[in-house]
Amino acid sequence: MKWYTALAIYTVIWWLVLFMVLPWGNRPIATEDVAKGHAAGSPERPRILIKFALTSIVAAVVFAIGYWAYVSDLISIRR
Image (cartoon, rainbow, N blue to C red; front, side, top):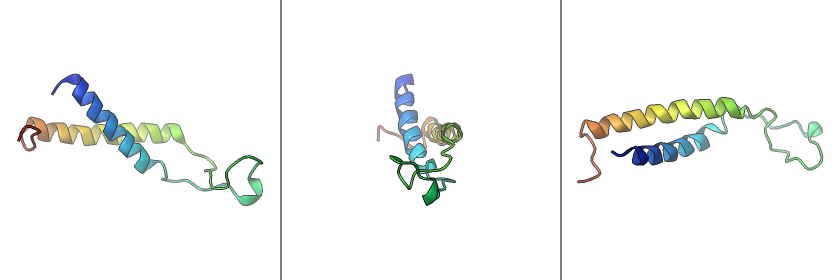
C-alpha cells in the first residue's frame, strides 16, 4: 500500500469516527442562558480538542487493525 493511499484511508476513517464521537457528553445550554443569535441546542462545553484527540486515537487503532488485516492477506482489494 502506498503512503498516500494509507493517508487517504486514515483520513476517511478519521472523519467517520469524528462524526461518531461529536455527540458524546454534550449537554445543551439551559434555555435561560441562551444569548441572542445562539442556537438553543448548541453544547454548553463542546470539548472539541479532547474529541479531536480521541478521534485520532480511535482512528489510528481502526486503521492499524485494517492495515494488519491487509498485510496478513485476510482482506484484499485485488480479489
